[in-house]
Image: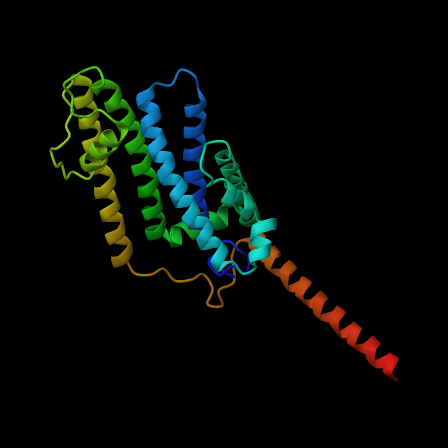
Length: 263
């Protein structure tokens, strides 16, 4: 059975790891925001990033809920209630996003590292997209916070708010460069150089990787039957088959007992 063909409420290994990485970023940002000596400039940038992540996690909850095999199981047994409450306005309940990390840990423990590496390698184009999104978020918030810190020292600067800093950081890493916002201090310009280098590196590697993934021939399966090669995966599959057989046997016994009672 392929990891993407789940009978549970899991949405695929790559997507689950992606959500886990976003949850790590969110939890780290929440810890930073809770520190007493954090500058207001950093809080502005991180608060905007948190708003974006909250909207994304809300969309993730709706996607999981409406596509779940069992909505009841997802909401109560798979921590769907925590996914929903973590999207509530305010920072108090957002630490419930740690349950998303618990899901990723449970998934990785279930399939083992060899099967995970094989799945990531097989779906490397999809994983490349997820990695780029995570890297862009990290670069945006780090670059935005630092450029705002430097530019706040100059009263004539045109980067004055967190939204200004994030807008400038985004157009810089994408190498668009509108020119409506630009750093005026030495430190801000150094941050701009770093962001341009990061942007060129991220998107050039991403473009080349995607092109190579689409143009390269598809790898053949190790077995035509699609049987997993990982021993742990084979054991899990055999156990699942035994459980199904036991259920079928118990149903047959119940029917036989009913027939015997009728006789």
